[in-house]
Image (cartoon, rainbow, N blue to C red; front, side, top):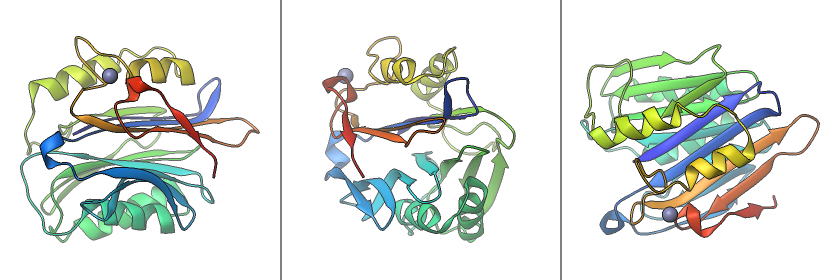
Length: 225
Ligand SMILES: [Zn+2]
């Protein structure tokens, strides 16, 4: 379960990305932040894959949100790492994902890829795929599909997404404020949001990578790559 915001071509920011990584504590082994090759990631111990990440060389941020409904044997987190390691753009990273999930071996999910030029959202359910987002400057996703008919659609997921859609200003401050929100609906979900990862890239500046390996309301640290 997750909340993901991907934005580019904004007034202050060439790129903004946030993922609140949610997982029930009982299903959780642990995660940390690390650099794998040239990709800064939230690493998931149990899956040996990643929840989200940012490639330093290609400037692509990506995340994956679980959708309940279809179970697959292969790891979405390993696929996401592969896409971010090898995709030289958001579109290329998305192509790596779509090519791979087509086989139907991955659990249902939405993958979101973002660079300074494009955002691509991929809904995957078994062998079904729906790709969208091209041309949009802001894409938000939680834990239900928008285009595919399949998959669970929990009330909480819909509420969270509706609330995040109200974000009227894309800035570091407004996004982090949202990520740490607690009520009606909670975006920082205690006992569930167990990591948070954000990238903000201003024009002509290096990207700022922030993370929290706990509930985000406890504060962010900067990752110096
Ligand atoms: Zn909190």
